[in-house]
Image (tube, rainbow, N blue to C red):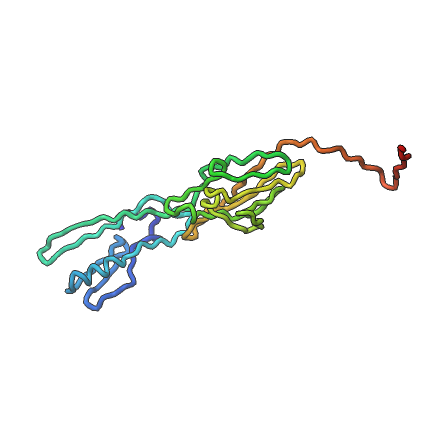
Length: 220
């Protein structure tokens, strides 16, 4: 492992073995060494099973690419090298969050122009929104009410499946969510989608004091 910004939390590792190949690991240089008399196929089989391991918590992982360098020496002391670049998977991020505006009691479809999250490796159908709360709104996926902890994906938004309805009150609405992706990484950050409402001229309502009554004469 050429660079290791996360220190001893990261290393190359292998769990596979071969009876004719000895495997050693140097913790200081983070180097795996394979020695022994074996076929080329046997060596290739082992080398294909080398893994990159990082035990840091997702929030603490340095997101710079890593380089895993293979150095091969043959029986004639000829040396060849090959670098494998390892991209570090990151939690998805919110790219767009404009909110929306509807009339009191109105509804709308959430589009990618309103709300969009992206991920460096995962496709839209693996970028997941988890509702953590709603205020003055009901959120639907394809017409089905999403309760707290309900989920939908970025692809659902792309496909026009996510809608909301305001409760008709005088206050604006919102819902909160966190993001995650296919491998389980989450940004663990609460985000808020705000819905602004435009006033509706409601019909007047007469409220009488308790115990009051109204009487009148029929116009014939």
